[in-house]
Length: 136
Image (cartoon, rainbow, N blue to C red; front, top):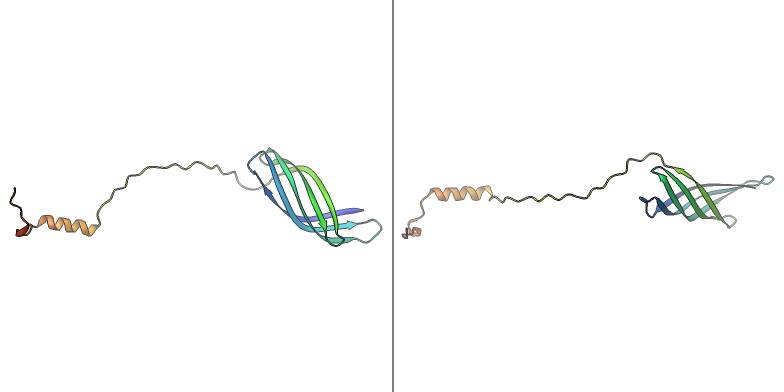
């Protein structure tokens, strides 16, 4: 009997920037049982599991995982062990995150324009006679 799996999975990588990256996975799809002398049977299935990737280079890694595959039509449950070589394509260069540089700037406080004009206007006038000081 031949068995085929068609599925789409999501993976969560625990430490994606390390050389050894453990992950968890979950997904859904179809499982097809194809016996040689009987009719083909296709069922909906879910899977979940754990695995690890060991990066040999930035885009090449060894990968191994264990999945629990559950078929709902016949209520079959299987364990699937896989190992392989992974190649990553696309994506951009890894962004280099630099520490922020803090620059100290001194603030210059200037009075609003209308206050400066008022000050200049009073300095050009003589003070009123009652406010004159005779101490000079």
